Each structure stands twice: as C-alpha cells, then as structure tokens.
Length: 379
Image (cartoon, rainbow, N blue to C red; front, side, top):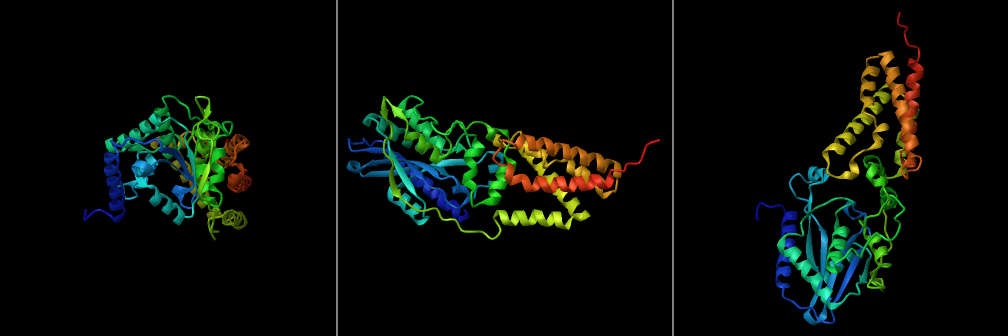
C-alpha cells in the first residue's frame, strides 16, 4: 500500500475493518436487551455535510455490541472523482464503526446527534442485524450515489422496510413542498452554493418532495410512523446538542453578489457587455451538456438556460463584429426568453436569488436594443 494516497489508505482500512467486523458478527444472536435505532446527525459546514447524516445503531450490552452502520462513506481519492460525481457514477459504500468512535467524531465536529429507537420484535432486530452484516460482507453495501433517489438516508429506509417486510416508512411530512423548496434552507450561510444549485437544477426538483432523502425528513416521518398499530419510534433522544455555528465569509455572501452585479451595471462598458454575454452563454452550454451527460436526473430539463442562454454567445460574436441587424435580433430574442423565464419562476423559491442576474441581463439587452434599433432598410 506504499503507493496508495493517505486518504485512500484510511478509507480502505475503515472498509476492511468494517468487513472483518461484519463477518465476525454473522453468528451473534442478539439478546432480549438488544436495541435498534435510527441515528440522525445534524448539519455541518462542509459541502458534503450540509444536509446532515443518517445511520443505524445496533446495541446489545449482553453481547458487547454497540455499532453504528453508516451508508455515507466515499473515497475522495477515487480516480476522476469530480467527473464521476458529476456523471452520477460515484460509488458510496457502508462502513461500521464503534458507537463511541462515531459519537466522538461528531462531538469533535460539534454536530448534534439524535436517536430514535425502533419498537420492533427481537426477531426483526436480529433480521435487521443480519441484513446489515450480510450487506457489508457481500459488497451489496456499495451503491451508485443519487442525490434524491439513493443516498445514506434512502439506503437506511430501504433496509428497514426490507426487514419489516413492507413499505412501512414513507414520507409523512411536507409532501406538498417541492424538493427545491425543501432543499433551499439547507444552503443558508452558503450563498454561492445556494445560487449554484438554484441554477443547475432542472425540473425534477420542482416536483412534490414525496421521497425520503434527507435525514431530518426521515426523523420527522419516523416520529409519526406506526407499525402494527403502534408507534414505530415514539421517542426522540438527544445524544449531542450543539447550536449550529456559521462563520461569516467575506466573499461567500449575498453582499459580494449584489456589489458585483451593481458594478457591472454602473460601469456599463462594451467589453463588460461582451464578457457578460459570453460567460452567461457558456454557462448555458454547460447546463445543457450536464443535462445530457449526467445520470443525475436533477440536472435534466433545466429551464434556467432561458436566462443563461447559449444564444448569448452568438449575440456576443455579432456584437463584437458590430453587426447591427443580428445584434438587434438576438438581443430581442434573448429578452423574450428572459420574459418566459421570469413567468416560469413566479412560483419558484429561487426567483429572488437570480433576480440580480435577470435585471443585469435585461438592462444590457435593452441598452443594446436601443443602440441598434435603427436597422438599415433593405431595398
């Protein structure tokens, strides 16, 4: 392993330890004191921790078992990590940790942890324990990550439902809200992440959020879920409690965004127009490419290309060549596209975050139209 990067060594070591633990736990028969619970971890400040985390805890003091099964592990040193994540081919996998190690890490990160014990018979606790260990030992714990459809929360839901023999755990709260609306508050204090996801997500996130894919959503649904006419997880126990800490970033905030767009409007130079149209057009091409390239369905059918319109690239070319006729025509076309875009956004949560870009685009296009509105007559 001398040539394996350090992070990969750690990841492989954790997975190997998990595999050994899973194999050694195969023959353990849980006692009557065994408890099975769903662990919900609070949000963090890193991009991969913005949404919290879900895990399963198996505790049996008689057999000296206290383990946390975590389906959210991934390897940063995976070759082509970013392209695989963008494509939707990145492999996530499960690891099992000692409960004390798991809690120590979250205490160090100052992230809250809560626990909901499942009120199920001993035979089902045993079945879930065996399902978890079989999954680890067989490699079934590896899965292709999907933002909404397959992640650490959905994997836990699927395993528990499989054990219960029915689809018992389903989304019980906020089903009338769209995925976009549910996700939006998670990006508070991370402005450019909020702006980026607002403009790269397509129509899928505007559908009603009926799938359980976020830890807090699972926690809320578990609290009102019943199994055989009894509450499945009637109590919520706080293990760690930390107030969310958000460090103010001098650049990652709405103020730099507003200042930047305001400066563009104030300076209002020809080269600024060309640069703005070019960047917006290339972003539109990128969104279209990702919609076709990526297996993440959240990126498909992106109506934000009406604002980030690839036609702006063509406009920039004719504008630079001082072609009055086609500059005028393309400016009008893009202005109409933005009008359609604003109508689409009227009931969308991200209307106001893109509004400065809409205003800047409209202002520049109207400026161009007013300058080029005198078109030579064709005889």
